[in-house]
Image 1: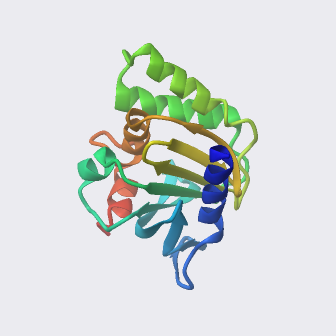
Image 2: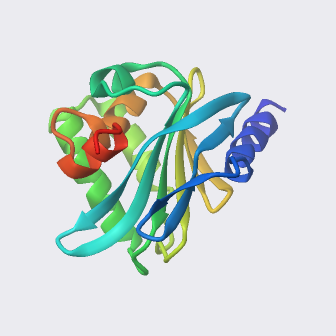
Length: 189
């Protein structure tokens, strides 16, 4: 029964939002999300580019606004990152390679075997090409872990605060993959 509750709570994040929304390159991101009873507010938005290609619009949702990347990465609180794809046709292989590059930076090449197993499980969620207007919600809930919800469907959950820290550090950490996106997600426009 607990799994059903988690799935319903995650589904609620996709259905919830305020009447207002932020516009990122033509993509509307809601100002709020409700996840497992927690109200999350939009902390910042940005655009992920690869060279000159616009890949996705992103929004960081927290329980309260915060500009300190380390506080956000370390927090054991509900939070989410929404990736709304602009580019049509990001293959599972490209997604997995990008995640692996990010985790290599945030965890280092000598990550412990249990963490590598979590990354492999996470990568197994990416089986379809990301198309224009697909929404990928990465939702962290304390004591449950990080869930990936693609277009309102739960793909899976990876337990552990360690995984959440490494994942969110890809966007927000000291060695974030895209410094401009990091600043935007932190609300430093």
